[in-house]
Amino acid sequence: MSFVMGLNPMRTTGIKQLLRHACRLVAAAVTVAAISQPAYALIELDITQGNVEPMPIAISPFAGSGLQEDVAGQISSVVAADLQRSGLFRPIDPTAHIQQGMNVGTMPRFGDWRTIGSQALVTGSIAQQANGQIRAEFRLWDVFAGQQLIGQQFFTTPENWRRLAHIISDAVYQRLTGEKGYFDTRVVFVDESGPKDARRKRLAIMDQDGANVRYLTRGDDLVLTPRFSPVSQEVTYMSYVGGNPQVYLFNIENGQREVLGNFPGMTFAPRFSPDGQNVIMSLQQGSNANLYLMDLRTRRTTRLTNTAAIDTSPSFSPDGRQVVFESDRGGSQQLYVMSSDGSGATRISFGPGRYSTPVWSPRGDLIAFTKVHQGRFMIGVIRPDGKGERILTEGYHNEGPAWSPNGRVLTFFRDTAGEQGGPQVWTVDLTGYNEQLVHTPNFASDPAWSPLLD
Amino acid sequence: MSKTLFARGARFAAVVAVCLVAAACSQTRPELTTGNSSVAAGSGQDFVVNVGDRVFFLNNQSSLDGSARAVMDKQAQWLQRYKNYSITIEGHADERGTRQYNIALGARRAAAVREYLVAKGIRPTRIKTLSYGKERPVATCNAASCWSQNRRAVTVLSGQ
Image (cartoon, rainbow over all chains, first blue to last red; front, side):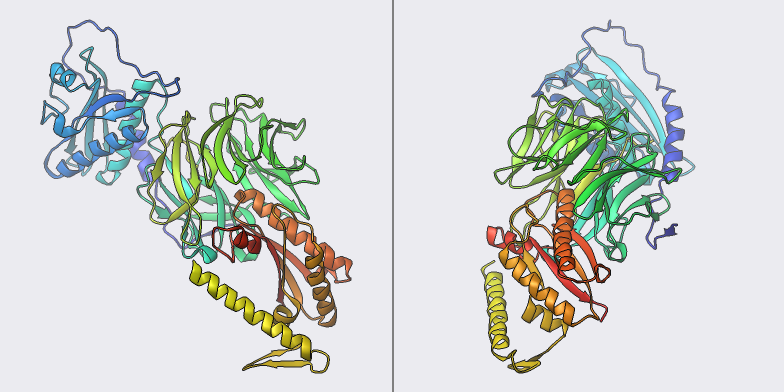
């Protein structure tokens, strides 16, 4: 049972095809003049430590030919902004660069870049193609070793320039940190407008840096808790369509929406399994909420918990074998881990306060949560065995963490008090450093990260 | 903020005044008149003004205390008398909790009200429940006085 919404669905298919095409071309690395110096002491950023000293990096404004001059400058600015916001890099102000006017073919004068303290350098060029596409080339240089670390080129349409920038940022991030990036991703969230006692809530999606906000629902119905599929351009969320709150599945590419299941009560708090083939959620049954699993192919539902309690906010481990959830079965909200068949639930949170909204890291080693204690709302992480609890941020109201696809960054929402107050989306590094506001047009809550796009 | 508080206070005072008049007249007249507005017995306004359409809960609780039970007793009597109404009980939570849990907590509060009405003889088929969690506050200040107004279950009439 599905129908097409009267909204503009996002047309990502074309983009994906283009970039897939581009990826094939990536293999054909740009050839560069051979560098005679031996390679030694290649730079690498160790991000396993708590407080990372950001690496000074220079992003030379990209050169653009003809129509693409502005776009070229914008691309290098977005790359610099991505790297800066990660907290792991400190882009050097381009006005301080000694060697100016570089393009992708210019050999760096490494001494000039060492003089301004830069450890890495990114150069690039954007050129207009006869078929209307643009060709983007960039290189990442190790300033101290005097070596090229990456040389890649991409072909895409000019409108795609922001994605192109994020893909370059991901390549730089991955080469220098050894971990996959998260810049070419999007975040689905709840856009909130209007007065506090009559909020209009719309499902919306944006690039991870807050750009390109688009609305997926009109705001006629209350929508909550959207979650991205880990494998497709689909979102599961809760909507009050027709005054009947249920979990829905929404296809971002074609705008189709369908209710999940035919449950005899309210369903809420949905989340995909790691293979994207199942949705786990809560079903309200009288005073109690229990966890159910729905197989998206067969549409069969399986009951996982059956207690006189509120069991909600389920989240799978990345191997799909376990589920973490919150329950007040012991008297107050606490975190529990059980097998994905519903057996063997074990409480893992024992600190003072109430624990809720657990979400398993894509790396599997940590579970993020919201903790409420003495009127303060915190975002923290804990190991699946219940040890190693760490609070990353705390204040009047922080809620609803979600992981970046590389498990390095958490996004969450922070609410402010009173009539004029409202939620905004923030990110914080796994280490608890580098809190960043994501600028949105209106108030925003319930952010959920997409997987890396492909 | 103080303006809203004042407005809210004024509204509350008006309701109290209406209730006092209602108490004085309800023995003799099925229809009550206060100033320019009239409250017809058996009307939605009658239910809100003379019975009370909502009950309140303690922090993180869903049990009905003495004053809540008194309101529910009046609701049950009224619904016994005016049998053509169906009702939706809307459960709510304050904003000092997390979203998903509050959805379930609001549902738990609505269920408590439902169970009470059923125990008082209201047919279950007349009753629907719905939870809005913390998404529909009526009081928006940052104070315990506002949060306590938001922890509520509201009985909404329909289908006369």
